[in-house]
Length: 337
Image (cartoon, rainbow, N blue to C red; front, side, top):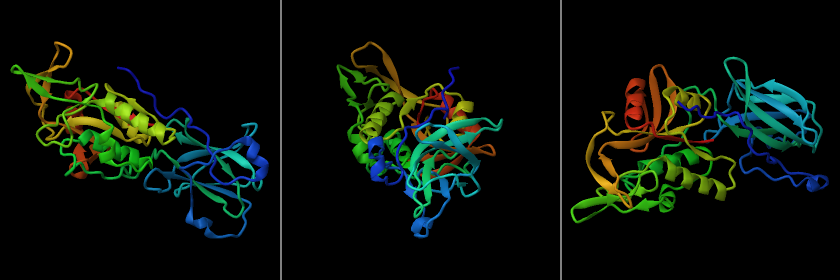
């Protein structure tokens, strides 16, 4: 079974705070993701830079992470520390109005530091606390993926709705209706008694807006939609088709702070097929699933899988039930990281 990459690669460098005129030649860019903590309302200058690692969407402090302070020009390490339970770490070897690279690491059970986020900040004594959004590798219960429901607008739009929820988790504030407009679609029709339709790996079959005229889509078209949106939004994340990933790999993603869009069955029973359509332009028959569904896997623990179900919201499903449905449907999945 193919292994899929986890969070071992750093993310693009961005600026978190304003810069002085002397730094304009560095061509630094402001980050759209950085936020200031309410603690910065105080105008009392500080000689200590406080970095708070917070989870995407929830903005809650993420504990058990490593943080390294680097010299912006030389990239040499100045200091490092481990955040406290509020996600805070403190650096006193800083100079006012100077840029620094901040690298956040997930610390594995074996003590290995694996880079998961990177930002450039400017230390401003009057605003000494900066928040950096990052992957929550140690959620208390599950990742705080926002609930986005497919009904009533998209009765057969579980896949695009689940993807919308994931992008919202990363702070993109997307709308399921607008995302559905850019989802590739193919007609399902009957000609001379034969039913024809698209390859679900290339387009959605029918329309998610139609209760009786919508079917489903697999990961590749959603990956294309997500990556186009991420590029348009100048986001550093990218979607990845991880179809074929094992149970253990899905759990690793979630435990690394990455929600997973997974295909399961709507009733948690074995997949059921009824009839087929011929994939347009080929002689291949595609058996039509009648109980296919897509959800976002957000947590795992104590024999339960936590999901954001676009029909009902947050649920906990027995792990054997969840992974059996996932595998029987073909182990379709995607992530954004």
